[in-house]
Length: 198
Length: 105
Image 1 (tube, rainbow over the protein chains, first blue to last red):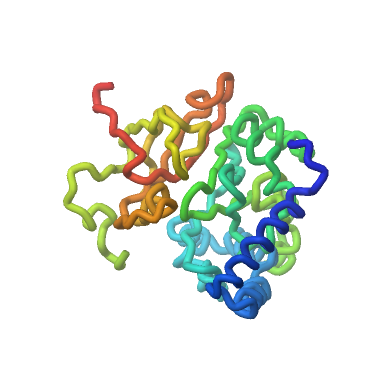
Image 2 (tube, chains in turn green, brown; image 1 turned 90 degrees about the vertical axis):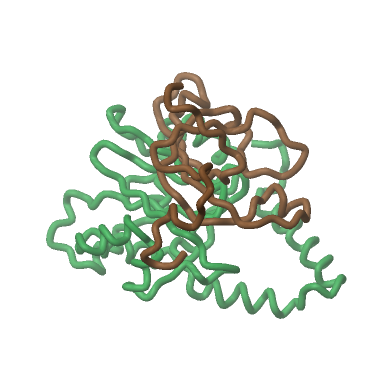
């Protein structure tokens, strides 16, 4: 981490405000335009969306296959899409298994599947997480309180281009008998980033 | 991309890549924006997927008109990038970033 006293969010916010006001001065942006776009986008973007996707994949093997094959084509089955932002983003869902654990990051900036997970946590945008998780994912996951079995292979997905990633956690062993809505309650944002088991 | 059209059929160029192709990323530090992370320079990886076609960000950032080109998902063994690691790292790579290694390399 840097020695700045400002939090990463505060630094980013200051930069965004500067850019925004400059764009407004140049007449390239109507202030209301951005507010409306953000409000419309965020009103639909929440971690509950991702949790619903995971729960459906746990109970419906056909959906799971379609989701892993082509997530953008499968999302509309739950009334969801990746088209809420500036353009339709490609989504790739990566499944955890008994032998493979996945974790997502954007080392170049802070790309994140906002439509499915809501706004990203501050630590996801931190230089510390972004630089360390590609180098030593096991140590980073340990810091999150999650010790991945040393026999498990880890893949780190760095969203450096037009694809957004989401982790499909494994269904907890003790969740037999739970319905889809109850299962969705078990799914956490951190689980879908890959820094928690579920 | 239209449904039913295979991901290879958009182009007739012989330099398009296929899953399993072994590729190398650029070694150099360009004097402009790029989406090759510093940690992934000069690394050898394997193409695992095709992500569609997008303009090269290196050109867009400089205001240079640029046609969309293929973007691939490339898997790297972690020890290609960081000593003493046993994980994999997956990145998206524009075609212009990648040099295909000969099959016998």
